[in-house]
Image 1: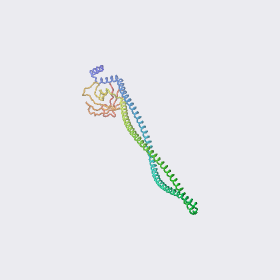
Image 2: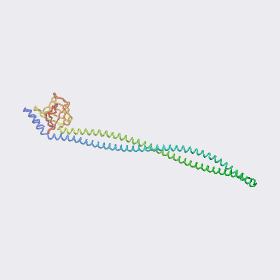
Image 3: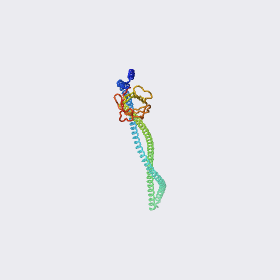
Image 4: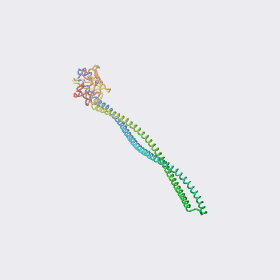
Length: 375
C-alpha cells in the first residue's frame, strides 16, 4: 500500500482532498473486492460447515437416544405383560388355594362326622361284643343244659319213666339255644364288617387329608414365588421408567441444542446473505467525505471520517452484534452527538458489501449509506 500513501500525500498537497479520497476509495475497492468477498464467503462457509457437522452429530445422538428410548419402552411393555401374566397366574393359584382350603374344611367336617360315627360304631361293637359274650355264655349254658338234657333223656329212656311233655320242652329249649347262637354269630359278622368298612373309610380320609395338606403347601410356595417374581418385575418396571425419563431428558436437551445450532446456522446464513462479514468498510457521505467503519471479529467497532486513521478524540467506538440482517451498535463512546444507543440498523447485501436504506432505519446514523468492504 506504499504507492497509495504517496498518492494520498500528492493529492493532499494539491488541495484536492475530496477528489483524492473518492479516487482512493474507487481504486482500493476495485483492487480488493474479489479477494475480500472470497475470504468472507470462505469464512462464512467454514462456520456453516462446522455448524452443519455439529447438527449432524447431534442428530445422530438424538437417533441413538430415540432408539434407546424405543428399546426401553419395549422392555417395559414386555415386563408389564410378564407382570400381568404372573398376577393372573397368582390369582388363579390363590383361587385354587381357596378352593382347596374350602374342600379341606368340608373334608375335615366330613372326617369329624365319620370319626363320631366311628366312635358310635366302636361303642356299638363294644356293646355287641358284650352281648356276644353274654350269648356265648348262654350258649355254653345251653350246651351244658343240652348235655344235661341228653343225660336226662338217656336216663329217662333207660328208666322209661320220662313223659312226652318233658321231652318236648327240652327240645324247644334246645332249639332256642341254637337260634340264639346263630343270631349271635350273625351280629358278630355284621359288627366285624362294619368295623372293616369304617377302618377303610378312615384310611381313605386320612390319605385325602394328607394329599390336601401337600397341595396346600405347594400352592402356598407357588404364591410366595409369584409374589417374589411380581416384586422383581415391579422393580424392573420402575428402573425402566427411570431410564425412559433420563432418555427423555437427554433427548429434550439434544433437541434444544439442535434447535440452537439450527438457529445459529440460520442466523449465520442470514448474515452471509445480508452481505456482512467482519472487516473494514468505507462509504461516501452526503457531504462528499468518506466514512470509515471497522468491524472487528471480537465484536467491537470504530467509526471515523476519512480513509486514514483519525485521532482518538474523533473516533466513535463500541460493540456490535449481527443477527441475520440486523446490525446492532451498543456501548458507543466518542463524538456521537444526539445519536441514541443501542442502535439497530437493517442491512441489505450489495456486490461490494452491504447498504442501509433510509426506510425502516430512522434511528440508525448509517442509514442511506452503502458500505464497501476493504479488508
